[in-house]
Length: 238
Image 1 (cartoon, helix red, strand yellow):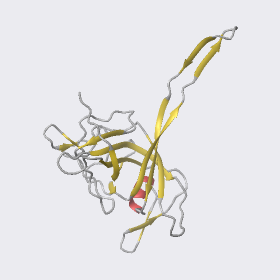
Image 2: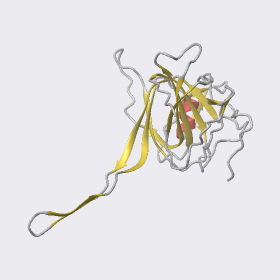
Image 3: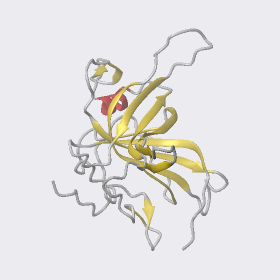
């Protein structure tokens, strides 16, 4: 077997999908279920690892009798996303906070609410690939977080002078309990070079998948849009 080596280069787009309480993708046609944006500067992952305990016992003469260490345990990943523009419906989809609208119904802002945020979403992040991100043989970085929840403001919001750039940073935590499987979107070519769902399903316990693909990122949406799923995709059994 041969590895396809690639070097991710510059983030392209993020697609957020609203999930149910079991982190299951929505049915096709579900209103306001998908949002694709390029209004971000960074997306980062930080591993939350519990260090294994060490059992150390010495003999009476001071020599080591037992020296064993349990393996470290990956608990989950902390996701940080920094937005360079206010996208009210996008932020609402992640946090569950209410959207503020103008007289024509357009989202013009959002309320920051006290308490916990229990909205569950999937996050897909596309990037370019250095050297082969256009033309024939193009390849893209494709990264999937099948279940993310608990979004909160991660840093200070600041309104200041010309040397201060406005940004909103949101943080959340991944979960390995989900039903993503092959995923509901066309993100990978099959043996006939036709775009379809993932060829290798994402298993329970997987918090993220990091891979490359020949399928380009989806177009940015003007706001949240109805769910449009891959042909033949069947929702997992409840």
